[in-house]
Image (tube, rainbow, N blue to C red; front, side):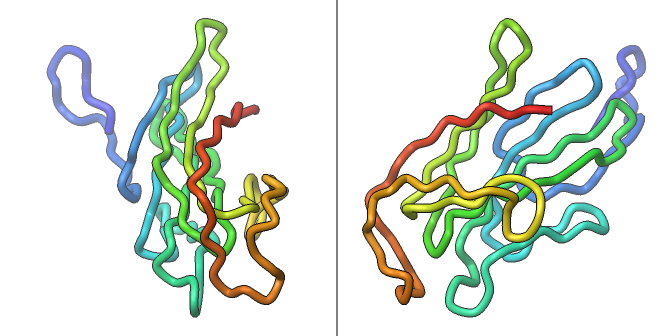
Length: 147
C-alpha cells in the first residue's frame, strides 16, 4: 500500500500473499515471501507450485511493483521436492539487492518460467531421481537479485 505523505490517506493498495520482507528501489518495491497454500496468486498471475505429493510445500517468491502499485514481475523459487522458506531481503550501499532463504533440497529452481528458469544444484547427492520427497540438511542461501 502507498499512503499520502501529508494526509496519511491510502493512495493505492494491491493484494499479495504473506510478505516476509521488502526493500524500496528508485522505481518501485521488491517484496519476498513464502507461501504454503499452493499455488500462490498475485492479482491475476498464479505461479508454479507443488502438486500431488508435494502440495503444501512452501513456494518462495520475489515480486516487484512500481511506484504506482502496478506489478512488474513475480518469480518463483522452488525448493525441489522439499521444504524451503525463511525468505529475507537486504540492500547494500550500492543499491544491490540480496535475498536469503533456506532449503532442505539438493536443488532449487530459480527465476522466470515454470517451474523456474535455472537450477541451483548444491551437489549434495542426498536423494535419487525416483524419490518423490527429498529432505536433506537445511542449507541457508544468499542470492543476488539482478534486473
